[in-house]
Image 1 (spheres, one colour):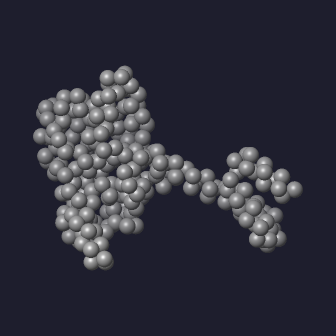
Image 2 (cartoon, rainbow, N blue to C red):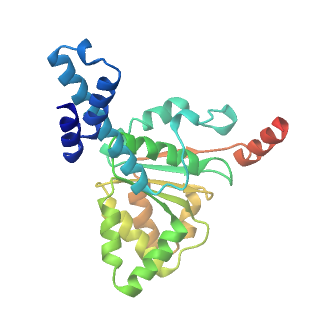
Image 3 (cartoon, helix red, strand yellow):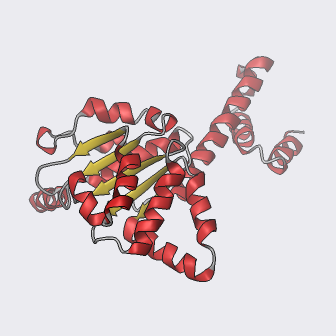
Length: 248
């Protein structure tokens, strides 16, 4: 009877229940529960399993460059990171309010790690997230214009509740990239959130975008109700190298 039940659980894709029931049988703990306790236990197991798989899919779909977490952020005073502010952002209420986060700082200061940590937390909280290297995104959109899939790509981006534009401003935008950025920002205004990381201070973004009218339109929507984080201090990559050398 138990084997038939386990087989049917698998066929019904009740993997959490299957695992919990199988473990209870193998450890002989089925008699430790009343009927209602046992039902509650296997339903909780199914709930947890589905939730974990949902989070795993969200993280995979986000296509993060690397794994990071809020717990591993180094809150060094020299880095100018307010722990209370970061933990508040990690609650992800900024996404519900369609607010943005702008993270600036020099090379290696941990901008991408911080942005990804917040976005990882958003995946855990059940939000749709996707990561983009800004230069690669613009190249992809140019190719999409050439092959006729441009609107489809913009629609995919618009469906996300949070997007990361990493390494924005490494080079000035040409007219095509400028328009693409405007369309992305316009589509998300009051509908979704963006985390932007950049080596260029926010006041330098006008020059990076170029064409004053479009720059005004983009930055008015992007900066309005945005949380700004300006990282300082020496490169975190250099620090890790020094620590590793000392450990060796």
